[in-house]
Length: 242
Image (cartoon, rainbow, N blue to C red; front, side, top):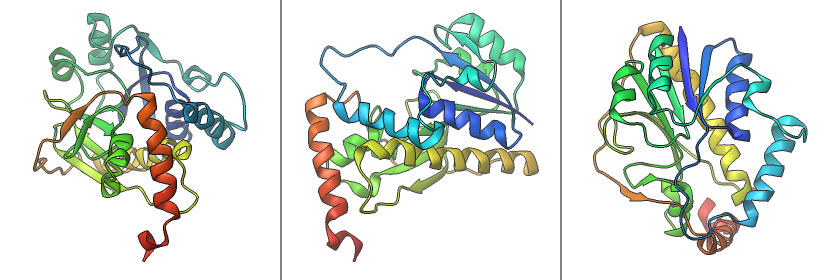
């Protein structure tokens, strides 16, 4: 079975692809190189520097400059919505497409891509669509919504039928700089399950979302300060483990 991975160049995406290759998945990676539209306010927070160092140590023994191209030969495009990208993805003729961290895909690529085109969403789209969903859930003290979701892509924004979801387990060691790595491991397990299911039965069960969550954009850096504190206080509170 052929799998197309539509993604961007980050450390956790490199780990995701490396891990799939290690179990023999036949895949082709299509990378989007343009950055999302940058907000006019500051979004980068110091915890993200800590996060990158933590992930590098966790997955790559602190090696520097790890890229997807260390593990496979990706096709790179400024935008995956541009015609050359649409053509390349269509011609690859994958059985399954997995989207992990790209900008919003438009109609032409949705229709030209694989029949089974899935998105990995770090959050519960029935409450939090868009960007920084886990952070917004923490900000609103909504820890039950710190979920990882695999859903079909439709013409809405994170509104497609849900294939599977998994709750991120809270423990006293969890800190904000570790959250992305925990989410990535869940994304990896969901991707493996979806690939296995489709390979064996040629279909994936799904269920329509029962409500449309609020759409969020990038979280401002000053609000991330609060998320660092809120998550630490939550996991340190014994009453949350009763």
